[in-house]
Length: 198
Image 1 (cartoon, rainbow, N blue to C red):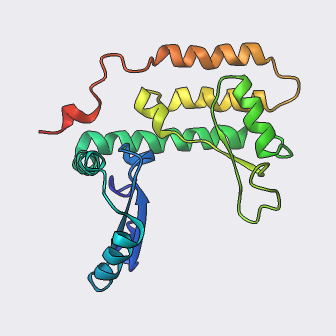
Image 2: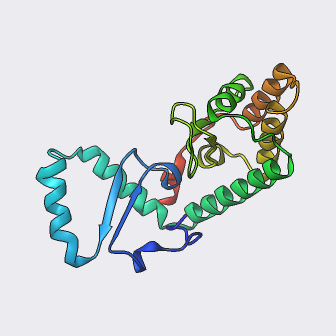
């Protein structure tokens, strides 16, 4: 979201910035550290030999491709859709009147029954153990990459609200989840962002 200009850039205000290259950047499972020049040598020495030995060259190449793709307009359009989808999902969940007495573990298990994958997650000041947790984390990038749009996420939100409500029809809700996925099949002629790189 930062690369697409949709979230404030922390680099201008921080000595150190860390991030992942997966999730919203849609790259390999990896990370990176940005720092000011005055700290560069200390970071380099801490990483090698302190933490890392032989880097995986294919992952470095994949990171380079990821960063190149992140500089394109189609990638920015994808990020704008990720943001729209997240906003729509949040609005749908907030207006759905969810019972917040669920634990993250219970909500995760119930949503799995209706073919929605989330993961339990702690929330700020959480008093429950991480294995139980008080919340769930729901991401929109992967489904957006698959082609889901805002109306699809409104349906996802409705399925979540109903699944966590009183006496849900789990079979019907699972069918609605499956129908969404059938509308947006995985990899139909998928070339990914390779078409955006000259």
